[in-house]
View (tube, rainbow, N blue to C red):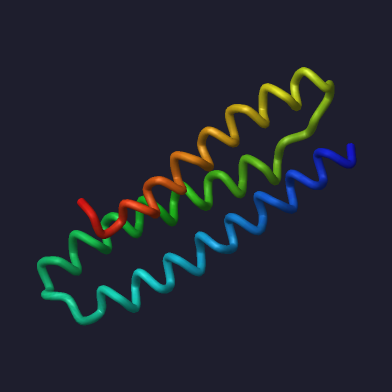
Amino acid sequence: LAEVEKYRKETEDKITANNKSITEFKARIAGEKAEAQVAYNQKIIVLEQKNSDLKKKMDVFKAESKEQWENFKIEFSKDMDELGTAFGNFFSS
């Protein structure tokens, strides 16, 4: 149970950091051409939705067994890593 709570706290911190990055992205694109702003805003919407979905997924998860927890953690960590990569590549594509 302590491991679950520790992991929840870690992911909560990452989700909060993602929200901060989204705010920073919005500020950075404010000076872009309208066409670029539209493209970036669409990417931001996707990032916000994925971040929100992961938060909800963590909030509703109830560990009923060690095996279930381990499986959830593996999949959730993979999803968080993919989202982190998307944040890292925000301005590159």
